[in-house]
Structure formats: C-alpha cells, structure tokens
Image 1: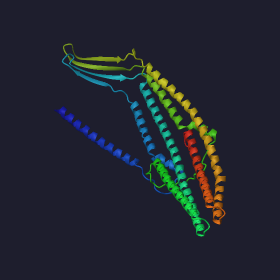
Image 2: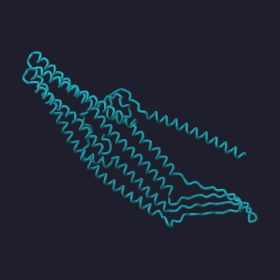
Image 3: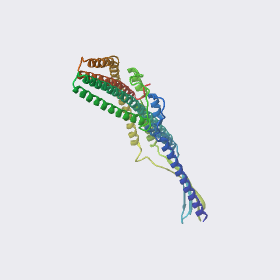
Image 4: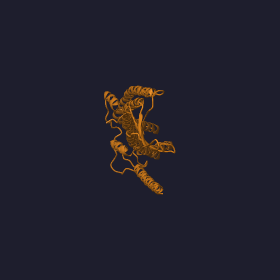
Length: 425
C-alpha cells in the first residue's frame, strides 16, 4: 500500500509538472507571436537607406526566423556534451542465486565525446554563417526595394508633370480654336493626349503603391504603412574600385564564409567517423545473495566489448572524407564564379553610371529647352499641334529614360553588392 501511495503521489507530481510546462510553453509561444507581429513604424523623419537596413535587421521576418536556429545549435552542443548513462539491473528468480543486482558503466574510447562536441560547435558556427548570409541577402533586397520605391515615386512626379503640360497644351489648343486660328480637331487631339497622360499618372501611382508594399514587407511592417524616403535616386553612393571589389568578395563574401564553415563542419564529421572505428567497452559489477547452500552473498565482475571483425567503420570514414573533398572543390569553383560575377557586375555598373551622367549633363537640359520652345512655337502659331505633341512626347520619353537610367545605376550597384556577397559601405 505504501508503494502504491508513493506511485500515485509521483504520478500526481508528474501530471502537475506537465501542466505547468504546457502553460509556460503556451505563454512563451504567445509572447513570441506578439513580438513577431509586424508593427507599423512611427511616422517621423524621412527614412534613409541605412536606417531601412537597420530596421530590417530587427524586424524582417526572414531574419527573425533565421536567428532562431542559433539556440537550436547551442542546444546541440549541450547534447554533444552528454555522457552515456550506466545501467542498473535487478533480477529475482526461483533459482539460486535468488536475487542479483548489477551495475554496468559504458566507457567511450577514441575521443568520441570530444569529437561530438567539436562537430556540434562547428555546426553552431556554420549556422551563424548562414544567418550572416541571410542578413546580407535581405539587406540587398532592401536596397533594391528602397530605390525601386524612389523611382516609382519619381515616376509619379514625372507623370503628373506630363499631365500638367498636356493640360497646358489642351488649354492652348482651346484658346487658338476659340480665336479661330485652328480647327476643333486640334482640341480633340489635345484632349486625347491629356487623357493618355492621366492614365499614365494612375498607372504610376499604382506602381508606387506596390513598391511601397514590397519595401514595407521587407521592413516587417504592414504593407500600407506610410513611408517617406530621404535618399536621392541619382546619388552615386560609395563605389569601390574593381580591385577593391574583388578583394572584398574573396575576404567577406558570405556565401564563401558558409562554405568555409561547412568544410570545417565536415572535417569534424570525418573525425567523428574515425572515432567510431575504436570500439567502446562496458565494465560492470554485480552482487548476488540467497544462494544457499552454496553461499549467502556473492559478487561478480563483467567486461564486454564489441569486436570490430565484420564492421570496422572504414567505409563511413571514406564517405565523410569524400564529402569533404567535394566541399573543397565546390568552394574553389564558387570562388572563381564569384570573381567572374564581380567583374561582370562592375562592368555593368560602369556603363550604367556613364549613361546616368549623360542624361544628367546633356539630355535633360536639352529636353527642357525643347519643351519650352515647342510651347512657345505653338502658342505663337509657328508650329502646329502635331509638332507640339511630338515634341512633348519626346521630352517625356527622355525624362522617363533618365529616371530609368538612375534606377538602372542603383540596381547595378545592388548587383555588385550581391556579387561581392556583403553590403557595400
């Protein structure tokens, strides 16, 4: 009865402990869920690119999820530090000796425990390298989304300016028609051009809303959260030289860093496989009693070991060593490919920068002069409406291409950053 009561007491204790752990786990999950719920950033000063990247570092869902791997890997190190438990057995039979109790202790040989710990620590370092790669990828995505939003907002301004110019052309056509200088078809044609400009403005606003939603998502905010950006789309930003870019790619590329950590992890895995070739042994001792008339109390000592006769784990070492060689080859191949990607991205960046400067220093000033001259010529009767609309369309195309050249430059800079594998500072 006493044993039964104790068992029931232990059972109640276990059930209560399980309930408490369940409640604590559910509470923790609720807290984590609340912490990871996207919250809109408070409206305030305009957001720079560096501030956007810093915000993504703490709020981006992909980065938040990737950080959860670190405690998992830390727990893996704790698991690797564990030692095997001894075995305790008790036997009660109707034969002599009636009662026997024995204790067996396993002993790991070949440095198995230290090799396991080294492997777990290598996995921890590899996980941290993957986190750094994830962060670099998200920062690159933020850079692209940031400048795409800037370009979309600038496109809205261009469309509105074009709509204003189309309205002026329509008003000028109406004035000349009222004065009997041009036919009514000029008014209809100007109205059609104004309607097209209004459609372009609506499309540009829709693109700006979509670009804002994409950037907000990367920042861990609601898609409709208001954003005011501070940086200039045409700002050149820090641009390394080609030798500097190649040096950075070889030294701080996060993809290569992941491969390096994976190589170190695989080398630790090879050591673990080698340690498995050394067999473990168990040492035990036992005590027997109630063996009358032979003896009252007796003892025994046991020793057992698995003999590596049929399986010596040599094949396992060969597998892990072959995988290590494969990782080294993959790392060398990727390093060569990254160097090629950096040179290609740098060539495109140089071309984009030259094209952006061409629009800024020559094409845009000329387009302003063409627009003003075309409006004056139509208002004075020197040119017809068709000439005016063609000139205005040419001006709109040039300004849109200039805007696209600015965005192409920023995206080419993001491509170079992606090829380097780390943010350009």
